[in-house]
Length: 177
Image 1 (spheres, rainbow, N blue to C red):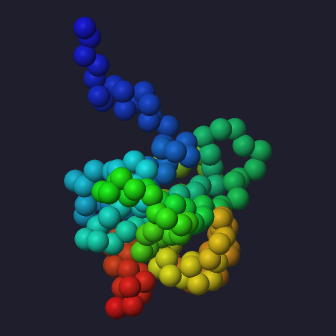
Image 2: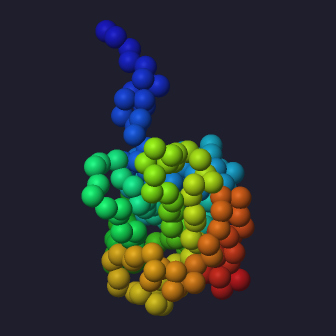
């Protein structure tokens, strides 16, 4: 029997970092590395994307340029719908829809020139960090949010280097510290 190579598989399956699903996982990885938790492995379908020192972090990504042929740039929007999240630790779903995370990190891959976009270059991303309590207070049942309405909620806009501090500050606000 042939034993397949993991690196070959990853290159075959995830070579195109602009695809929505792969870009989303990459955004989670970028946030994890900014927090210094690269060794904590991703849990698929957990109630939030990252759990760092008891702080639940939901990571959302968007980009103007997609992997498919476009006639115009994508409108930037993020999924913020309340869900009955599944808890990987207890193997249970929430009893009612809600937003499980303490903090949302909205990751925008900037750029409109397909030839120069590099999703691995953290300088090409802008991050918007928002305590979940703000979403729950201002848009409690909203399912999607576009960039301009998101900005109106007053997220902390930052670069990769400032992401860790912004996340901890948002977590403190969300928890009432």
